[in-house]
Image (cartoon, rainbow, N blue to C red):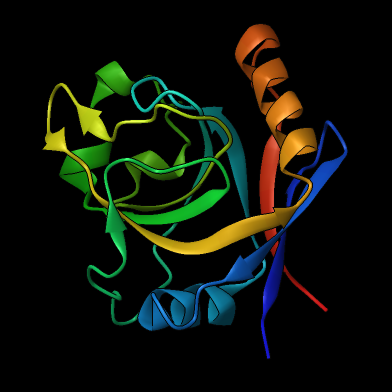
Length: 166
């Protein structure tokens, strides 16, 4: 039976439902599912294009490793990234001092992609492949509109939350 997660932009009151890709990314799905709920300050990507994400303290033990990788996510992809502290804490990335990006253990990035033409490359680090672990099946248009609003009006005070559904 399929498992679903609810992903919400809390301040904007918008949610979508994503089906876990248990067959394609079993380790990542298990790690995320077992750690839910998760919530963090919402960001809109600088580099990847049509991406919103939250950074949370690392929760997988052990880390799932690479599976179902992409550097070209499509609309509706939900992607897991594990960043070591030296890879995410660069001051040029603009995270507040209290952000999970500055944790000594690094950060986990839970991201969703809402539009086309994304490319996971960072000028400082090169390619940044991520594990696609879910696909949005309901509410993509609504979350995309809210994400575009974040890009145009800012992310301040917004949180991105992930929870089990059903």
